[in-house]
Image (cartoon, rainbow, N blue to C red; front, side, top):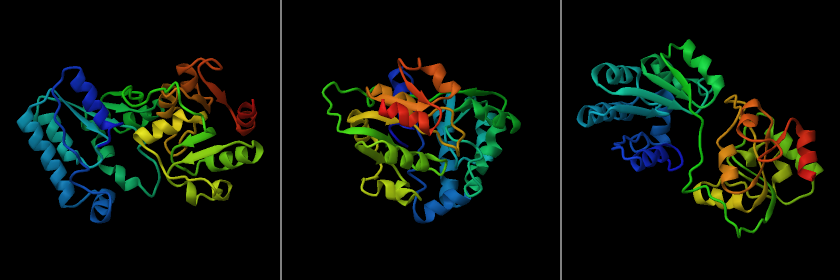
Length: 288
């Protein structure tokens, strides 16, 4: 569980006066070695242990609501048990697309087979709704992501040492080509921090940069030190917005984002956000 994801929900609910109990998948199933294999295949003793802990917690705690936050390890039989054998409303939240790639399709098997057993499926983006409905979701609602007011803050005295920065993972959706192009055409002080950038095909363009990912406070400090923070949208997830569109303004940083209907509905263009449609418009607006 991460402070800026599921634990943020726990904190917010407790601050609102609710009693919250948790079961952590990460404490039981690791992300390396045998745990990594279990996560990929969705079978193994630790997968069974996670499901057992969830059922036991529900029986002892007797909650009004059970939230499965990106609970990819929950078996369909466990979700069915929670819905039929407890009095709780059983809710799923998932921030990723259910069909990300052939390579990871097995990772999503349990969630896809459980969609119809949740009372409510909360999804990240409007484009996910149809996929959930096709899988038999009884009710699907979009719950947009958020920034954390206790973490993502502006700093009046921050020194802007970076002209243009992107803080997020690499993906083969064209962002590498775009980043290489703007670095070639616009001389500036750049920063790129995120997984995958060092091994990208175009990496020679930013080989001189430290691309190590930054998280939490370090991520906030990086944004605060940046004049223009770029936003790229995941092609894999079919994003029409991303969490960064909330985090960047919260940190007091100028945001340059793709022009989508969803982002345009959240901000007033050229007053609260600057948007671009292609690499040429992006270059022109960075120069401006």
